[in-house]
Length: 200
Image (cartoon, rainbow, N blue to C red; front, side, top):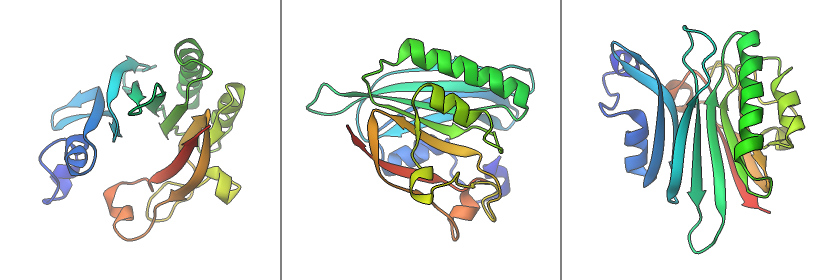
């Protein structure tokens, strides 16, 4: 849809455009197709992606949602990082079902002693359910640490609600940031988040 709105928008998929500029490895999980294109979740990496899968977690016909899971191998080590990317429902009932599915998926798929990064748009503007989910499986909200509160990300021009999160397990957080102002408020309707982590 961005390509229809902005003439300078890249013609290639955005994840390919970004990967070509900086990241040599990427995975994309297509969740919905419509007349002008498609959308889904993407993970870009500096390091080789050994495996990836995209699991359908849709709970209704109007919201096609997926769980993208990549296993990233760090060079010259035996360390594998499990990276998960999600975009959950707008309606709470479906979102709670997705959080349950996500919890079960992590418990059954990601070893407890493996580093885990889970990021995405959780659409839980009150954080009633997402923080309870994170606590149950020992996830740390990487971006809330320096701010000591949930970080607001939507809308990008004047963030009012905290929809987006970066959770980690088996890793320490060195620093994190909400990117705002300037070009950041033009690239998306959400303010982007970033975090630098240190494997424990």
